[in-house]
Image 1 (cartoon, rainbow, N blue to C red):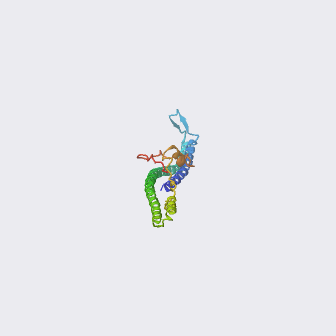
Image 2: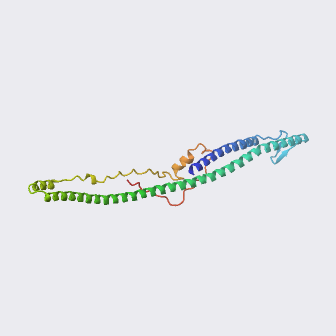
Image 3: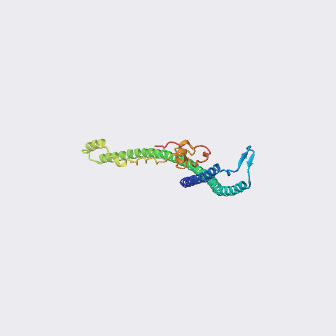
Length: 244
């Protein structure tokens, strides 16, 4: 995943930094030695077009000096060349890991934004279906209450018809004033669930803020600067607002 790719790239850059320091150390040692290199004092410049070797003794000194200088040069050049080769190989390897990290970051960015957009769309559809169902249920509930009220009063009026003449006026008054409780027919709906948290990617790979977080703020950045960031390809997913 992205976390693994980030870790591998960071570790690689740390190793690259160490190899770069080793390269600088070995090659600086070679350059410093070369800068201090001096031929035997008996060898002089002749019109600056050649050297003047006055005798065989001086030639022997020059030969001995040349052999020693060649040995030392070879001794110092070897570590410099190896450190340079190791550094370049690690640098190329880190660039490959960087590209892998950026590609995976782009894939995650696209997936996150797409998933959040799909989630919000799904929630919006669910809310619409819920509201439609509640509307139908309210209509059914109103019908049930009307039927209950009517049936209750009808039963009351039937009792009036069956009652004695003396009791009918009183029962009729009771039926007219009758106000049955329909609370048991009320529908109680559960509250709307809170919208789930879905984090959209704030900074896309290669954006200024992303570069600061992923590269420029790292301890290895100044000594192991990465190659140019590879921006995400394809269209940017524009997330929709979370429905409430």
